[in-house]
Image (cartoon, helix red, strand yellow):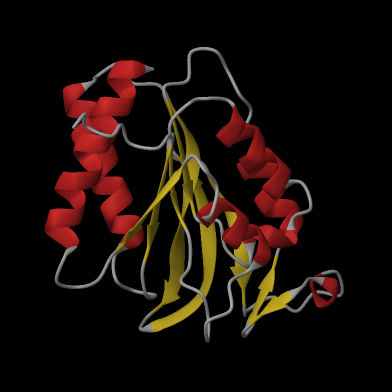
Length: 194
């Protein structure tokens, strides 16, 4: 029986705080050692903390530029119109200004990273179409998605999860190391074909 090639879109999911972003960043570091000239586009999100309190999230491009994604510390008249996710107001304009240029398809791009395709990011009406263009570009994609909440998936996330070119890796605290090795070997195989 022939080995099955990995799908072009590798999706990491798992409960909040399990280490999806940490896994993706670790995979990128390992890939950069193996492929020093690897051209990666995309972004990841990280918490903004004040002491022990999480006060928001920011977007960080692969080359290190940052911008606000969401905060619970903003109370300008403009921010009062921003959509809410939990206790955070989502700064859609800030997110779009940083994330959307990272999803422009360029001929020399080897890999896209999107951490994450979630509820906050999907408030941008331009974000999901950009994600679909990346998926259809034939360039490998490594992304993270949230688990369905109470068995209900966000429609855009469900479409990505069920796409013919997607493979979903569900992470938990006991399978993190094995998950990294498995996803890394899939990425290497995808990059060799690309």
